[in-house]
Length: 240
Image (cartoon, rainbow, N blue to C red; front, side):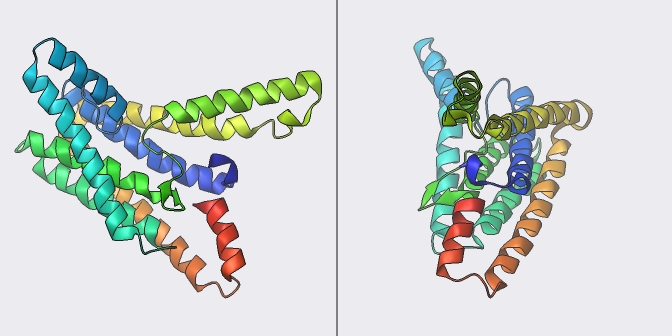
């Protein structure tokens, strides 16, 4: 997916990824090691909790997983019939959940965690192709695998002179996405240490701003008279 994005698209997606990292950083510290965007970690934690007799830990982890999936389901239902405006709608919904979580704050900590996890599920629907998520924004394992493959292909191309390394800088795109979630989590922890859960207002406002930018881009693409069926399909492959 990332190889079809221009650098502007990589940076746009990277900003969303940074916000996901921000949320995960805040949540990991505040909720004692639970993840809000990385559900593989919660799945592992749920198993460990269950086998060690920690029923509360198992419920907490599985609740976050369920909220994440519910967020994906809701976003899919609401955006399934849209094209150019699918991304901004999913991002606006995610921003609304983030701001609701910030409003709940320490008054309803469990609700805050569930809202944040749902927001992370929702935002993953932003980048879809043929009805399926094409670019994971809140989890980087697949991105790191593609980074390794692209880097291996680049090295192989340099050594053998074959075409496998023709795009020898492709790995940089995946490296940027990984770096953004890492930087975002650093920012989230830093903000939390100074502002507590009030730091969630920052990421909620950031997602709202980014959703508005996505809306302007979507409306501009929709209004482009040159966007016939063939062009629209090409743009979808490049941008979605």
